[in-house]
Length: 430
Image (cartoon, rainbow, N blue to C red):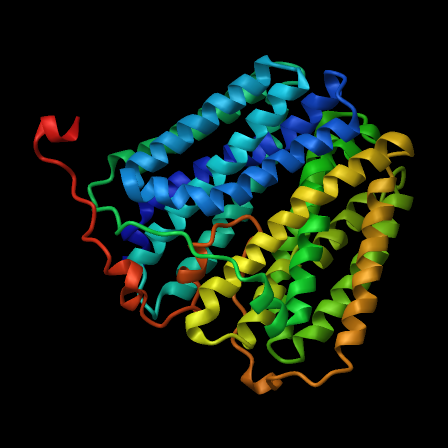
């Protein structure tokens, strides 16, 4: 509790930020449909968002190291506020591509600030609890944002203004903190070949998570809009899937600590394929939301299970790079899939989204089944403990993860520079 108290301001900013972010993620597909953008165009704009996220992982840490965490947070939050308001005012697709790229890069940078700051405040004994609380706040705030979009129709400025308001309010707790910000951070390279060599199953699971979960965030609201009578129905659609992923992540993680994780991933793929078929076939049925809950329960834990699978076979000093590879592969999948799936929805029908998800899950299930024929490098008893994780995080979260280095302060990047000081001279501050 003492550690939580020291990061109260940061967690408050996180909650406000993710409420606004959760709102805009659902609002933008709804607005795109209302202004006449095709499903294919909306898919491209979503790909631009995830491409911005990938670029943010690579380049934003250098900016934060140059200006500091507090100023970096303020600049990135202001960028998101401006982008969301411009998306409300503009309805031409080239502007949307640029603005969505900016929001992706900005949210990645904001995650980086938050997670590196949390890591700096946590000890080896408390990092697991801090990560769990942080993940819980992320999921709850994103779910809360789904309901707040109903303050007004997506065609109006009201929900966009409220989303921008929450994003702007997120600056206040961090900006008013009296605690010193952490040391500068540096980008960690992704090593896809190393991840593939260490665990083909983790490689496949990370890619599958991006292809399915990323596309759901991009096009799920578009699908729901075509089969819903009100905007509130879309809210329940998105929330049901989030709730399934949030509530079942820990039970599935508990199970994965006790059996070969490859079998857990295989079961999630089979379950994902089955639930995707159920979602596609139940659009007019009273049990439709239950199928969405089960869909979220099957596919949303895939990222965390893939990360745990990779951690099982990674040396301590490799974990950050391996984890970064899992995250980047997830983001690349999320950036590429909407390009094709949006086009399928435009040329066929909207249920093509979930039929495609079913086919993708089935294909990866076959691949994972083949992988289980080979002996694994570690036994079940040697597996590292599962830790919850949301698929939209930054590489800095892997230093917060208890499966990472035992003592973050021993990492060279923590000794590279002294903590950021607040300038006492007004001229220096300017």
